[in-house]
Image (cartoon, rainbow over all chains, first blue to last red; front, side, top):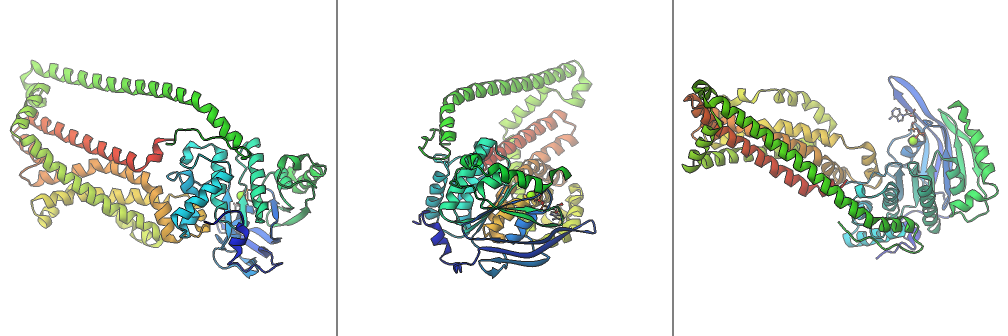
Length: 275
Length: 292
Ligand SMILES: Nc1ncnc2c1ncn2[C@@H]1O[C@H](COP(=O)(O)OP(=O)(O)OP(=O)(O)O)[C@@H](O)[C@H]1O
Ligand SMILES: [Mg+2]
């Protein structure tokens, strides 16, 4: 049985994990869309780096191309120009070791919670008994002990998003790409899931790129916050967040001294009045 | 379903969630029982109203034809229809005709749906191929099935095969279109998720597209039960020596109207039984739909 205790090591055995090579490097990526014959530049010129074990949050005005960026990074759409490197190698096709999660939980209604979590392992041909074992462990870690046999329709929104998180984490990805995964949750549930995510991710030194509309979420969970401009999108500002608290407790983070100041500065960067 | 509430785990992040769930369960199960009772009462009321409506219609029919010889000849009467049903049941023709038509319908239903569903689903694989064949499918789908009957009889003879062919033809295009619609209706985000999990196109097809299309496929099944039956009966009209369509045709040409209605009653019963079976299979194959 493979335990989830040392997943970073297990997962990285195959990857070219030379020290100092960032898991993800984006250089001068640009992307336009064709809308009714007009070319609409969405991503203007974007560069960023995600280091190992780092949580980076991306905030930006609605429609500025955040989802487009994420889809580009995981190989669902191709950029017009620029370079995306995963673990120091130019991207080709779907990157391995990358987990992807959206605001919609996208659980398959005909599968129980457990079988939803097993999906990725099943696809990769992991033996059923091992996949089941690992998925059970992951559900337990996310506080869903006893709900393995429930169908998604019988779970609350928060529980469903926990199952989706388990489905992502059970594959032991080195990097998580999260697109507003907690946006649809109520405040209390959101704080709890954010804390759990931070805990699980930090204890195994996974890297996270988190897209969010919620500036307070970005500041409380991330090591770095990248503010994007309106379309065509560029990096407008970067904040290294130093709160001096345990970075797995969202409530403590929100109560720390620097928190409000960061939020205020990012808020004014976003220029919300224009939207 | 796992009925016992899970024990709350100390230190588990969602322990609060789970504990609240456990505490609420007792009250919830009582509310659920009350809810079930009121739902049962509602459906009993619907059933009673349906029976009353049918009884009123039959009584009206019987009354209108009881004292009027001509009306009785033109419209039959429920008692005469009942009489014919009894005679046909006694001499065995009712069971034989129903059986023959039932077998034709069932085989046509199965062959048409298997072929239609397989083609419809596999069209998901290639947008190019589906665009190429789309006008042909629409053209074939617009042919009134009865227009094909003479050719089918020439090709397949006057026996069972031609009835099954008629039945299959009236099913296959509908099955193809509904299953294709289901397959291309799958959420793009869901497909992208499968891709990021490393799924091949075949894995996406098998683990996502096929199960996601099931409810559309079953909607097609429910629709095509009737079409299969129409195909079989039309086939029997053209040329046959047995079956409910044959019985209707023969009684009609002899102006024995109550006997026509008697065979129609058997046809309706057959349709209801087949639809009921499809519904049962649907529930069996899609257990998650019963929740929600
Ligand atoms: N496939 C496409 N074809 C044409 N235009 C597209 C396509 N995908 C996205 N766009 C356009 O690109 C822009 C950026 O979209 P995107 O979904 O990336 O924004 P976003 O930053 O994620 O927005 P939000 O914060 O609301 O989620 C939008 O104006 C959208 O209309
Ligand atoms: Mg978006």
